[in-house]
Length: 390
Ligand SMILES: Cc1cc2nc3c(=O)[nH]c(=O)nc-3n(C[C@H](O)[C@H](O)[C@H](O)COP(=O)(O)OP(=O)(O)OC[C@H]3O[C@@H](n4cnc5c(N)ncnc54)[C@H](O)[C@@H]3O)c2cc1C
Image (cartoon, rainbow, N blue to C red):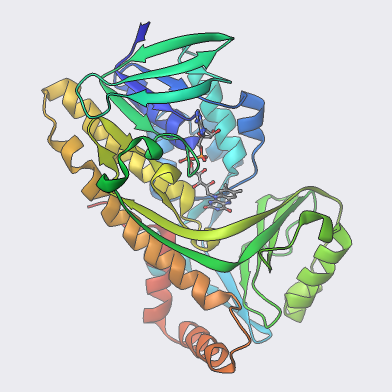
């Protein structure tokens, strides 16, 4: 039997960042992760950090490489009707974004956490949560062919959408809100220079596309695809042809293609669980909510949850006060719902939903309004860079 102050399920960005922040404040934690470190840091996912996330990572002492290698972006383009319009994030909101791959962030977090041996246990199986409604929760799990028990004061469920933490809460205690979208994103990663120095979001009659990057020599491109499509249907040549066909001429002529080294299809989903807390269990990041990636909010929301929860836990141990912990769910959900609204709106604006000419004309009218109205562009910029903390 082992004891810790905070048991954390999952070593994604939420779990490792929480562990790192707690350690910097003298709070002990143990992280239980199902996969190997190589698997976790090999996952290609998000790549855009809000500045509040950047500051939180710096506060956690893991920002050095990110600040050296990350690319500061002051704006992005929205392309439609064969033209492009720049959203000046810095000018409209005063803030920029940082391009830094989630897999790079995972590497930094893993390195930082390995300074404390035995804090992160990899390839742990059969994690089960017990007594979470009491002041003495415990976890059971299998590790290195043996069964173990971990006693703690608090459990942080940082185990993503398909994890065990949310499922441990009695179903009648939760309300879940969900919207699925009738398409997915096919993403491709290749070592070719990005077609533009900033991201380009594309609305096109063939479907949405996003031209993104991880560095000056590595591009991340996406095209909207049918949900039922399989990767085998998309050889690289078909992907490049389709992306090219969706780009206005001024971008298309700059597109450099090359062999992919990662290709995947993700379904798009909005999902929110309320509350994000039951007894001594706190849900964090994707375990509690999912947004479609259009607004680049998933990873940033996870970091925002971590910030609020870490404050609550530290306050509990420093001052003996549970007040911030009691407020965790309400404070986190305020931000989550605003980001959910924004991600839904940006997804709805840019994707092709059906062959309904009326809906298509409304999308174009809204895009033209965005291009012509400083107020509309400011609203987009404010939400994109992340709303301020209360
Ligand atoms: C395929 C994909 C692509 C994405 N692309 C983007 C994007 O382009 N832009 C964007 O902003 N966001 C994107 N996201 C969302 C973003 O990556 C997530 O919001 C972010 O990873 C959330 O971090 P997390 O730590 O909360 O959850 P996760 O990163 O999901 O981490 C959860 C961890 O828990 C572990 N785990 C799960 N179950 C168990 C268990 N039973 N026991 C122990 N460990 C367990 C998992 O192995 C994982 O390491 C994407 C997500 C996915 C899945």
